[in-house]
Each structure stands twice: as structure tokens, then as C-alpha cells.
Image (cartoon, rainbow, N blue to C red):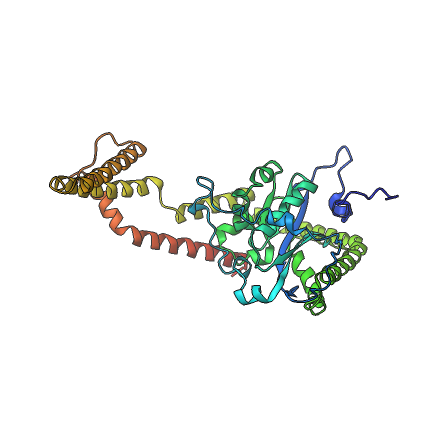
Length: 418
């Protein structure tokens, strides 16, 4: 109280002096991103469901986000019409255990199935969330991101091993506007990122993002390597002692990291200076060897991403033309059915006429989108070409997907000098 530390978020706001330092010199450039953070989940910090039930005390942790603030987001990521389509889904996270649900047996046995935490790039822990009877559900990163935005504001960058998928989750959540207004940037961690597909890496890997420098965003893995030592102490503890042990462990971790900050910054500075000196010489030698080649490195990533997207996607007009021909064939089928329904029961005839009218509306909509003035017929050349293309479509898609995968693999091998 005497020190004026009455703000509940005081530790979060001032825990790392390097991250919270604000530029005050007139000629000093602003950092972008203003701060780098990492977040991840760990399932070693489990607690048995029937342990310590007689101890009803609540430990006042300085790290834990209260469960009620987390559960606000429990139903927050259901798909909403028009906000998130199938074309936006990221499939490169399928191999990660973090993206999958926890086994049912684990949920029944353990009350706490692990923890989800965030830390700054310097290793200072910011906040921790209990994962209760679940795996890494979307509500845990959403609650964490919401708190970070409230406390730290604009231009934050956060790394996660499934950051590509998480960016789509945030875009479909209730904090979408807040994240957009605060210019939140999500990325994948450097080590985990190399297991994502090439197109994902170009958009989310720290190596290709402005302002990330040498940061790998794998801070949480180092923290978990240390906190795993407390797992045996908290497995059968009451919830009070569970929170107390973790709080004490993380407090000691922060104290150790705080003492190492000067050494950490000094070593990073020496590494950065060495890399600049070495790579400047290599670039100069490259320019002498290829004087006619443009050295616009920043556009290389943009061009590579544009190429991979073009190979991976079908031209929109071709897809619409196929849909149009298929709609015309279905329309002809309905016309035949309608002509044969005169002797059928009145209800069945109305149903056929209703389906026919719906199909006419679909065809007219496609004609408007394709700018077709006169309806195609089976004798029309465009109709025949599109019909032939639709028959070869699956083969063409398979070849294009294969080309994209081969090119991605070649790019990845080139990064390893192979």
C-alpha cells in the first residue's frame, strides 16, 4: 500500500522492465512490435479430482486468471454465418497434440489437466490459466489475449505453436474488434513453425515477420522444463496448495530471470552485431557476383507466397463455370420431372415446381456472376469445354497440389542448404 502498488495488475504491468520501458528520447525509433510474448499449454501440472477436498481455502495467486474470466469465452468460437468460411481453415495444425482434445479418461480422473501460460520474450511469466477437465481449448488463449490487450494495449506480437489457426479463432471471436484495433499480431514459434507448411511459414514464422529479430518465441518450453519438477508435489495436493506451489515456483523463476536480464540483453546485442557484420560481407560479395540482380529481399517472400497461393487455388471463374454447367444439368432434370408430374398428386407436383424454381434462381445467379447474357446449351462450345474440364478437374487438382507440395519442399530444403 505504501509503495502505491494497489493495482491488481501491478505485477503484470511492471514485471519486466525491458518490455514495459517506454521510449522517451526525441530521436529514438518506436519498436514494432512494441513487445513480443509467447504462450503455450502444458499437461504435466495435473491435479487429482478427489485430492484435498476438505481444504476449502482459496489461494490469492498473483498469476492465475480466475476461472470465471476464462469461461466467458467457452462458447465464443462457434462459427457465425459470414464470418469464417472453410477456405480460411488452416490444416497444418493437424499434427499438433495441442490442437486435439484430451482423452476422456484423463478428464474424469483429473480436476486440473494442466496449465496454460504466457510469458514475455525475456522469460518473465505474465499470467497462468488452469486447464480444467479439458485439453487446450480455445477459451484459454482467448482469455489470455483479452487480458494482455487490456493491460498492454497496442502493437503486441504473441507466438503460439498453432498461431496460424489461432489467428482465425481470434478473428471469429468476440474480441475480434479489440484485437484489430490494438493491431495484435499472432505468429508461430520458430521451432514449431518449421513443421508447418511453407505457405503458413511465409505468413506466420518469425523469420519472415518484421520486428521479430532473433527471437524464437519458444520461451514457454523453457519454463515448462522447469515447472515439470513441481508436478510430483501438486498431483495429490488440495487446490489451495496446488495454486500455492505453482505461484511460489513461478515467483522464484521470475526472480532468477530478473537477475539475468542485463546478461541476457548483452549477449543478444553481441550476437546481433556479429550477425550484421558477417552477413553484410556475404551480401556485398553476392552483389559483386550478380551485379544485375535486384536485391529487393522483402519482395521475395511476397512473390513466393503469391506463387504458392496461385498453385494451391483454382481460378474463381473456372470453379463458377463448373458450378454453372452442373446447375444447368440439374435444371434440365427438374424440367423433365416437372413435365412428368402433371398426373401426380397435387402436393408432390408443388414440391417439384418448388425445386424447379429454386434451381432457376441458382442458374440465374450464376449467370449474373459469370456475366452470361445468353444461357448455355449442350451445343455451346463453352458448355462442352467446361464439361470436359469438370471431368478432368480432380486430376488437375491433384497435379496442382503435388506441384505446390514439391515447390514447398524445395524451398524448405534450400533453407537448409540441401
